[in-house]
Length: 128
Ligand code: SF4
Image (cartoon, rainbow, N blue to C red; front, side, top):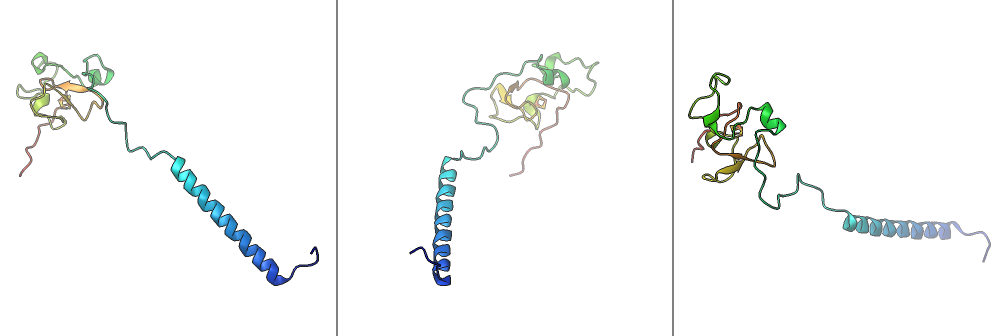
């Protein structure tokens, strides 16, 4: 049966071939989806307590972070006021009362709630 094929037979073979390609493609896509890791949604969650920010950290130096607001030199930092500390700053997160808490400006580190830096911004109470 090596003679010329009819148009009908050629179309049927073409349709069967296209169907095979579609099935193979779908199977390949399914296996690709199964093997592909889920997309990352930001940094991996912390698995333990975060380290404390130290005043010698380059970003801490740049923002004049002090572990204790009581040590702030008011001559060097004239915008500092005695009621300013991390615990009253809007950048501070975490649980109120914890002595070390996350700050938006120092990701991956904990700042001292009694500390201060030169970008302190008064926390605005949330209306309920
Ligand atoms: Fe403290 Fe606010 Fe500076 Fe963060 S931004 S270190 S909470 S004063």
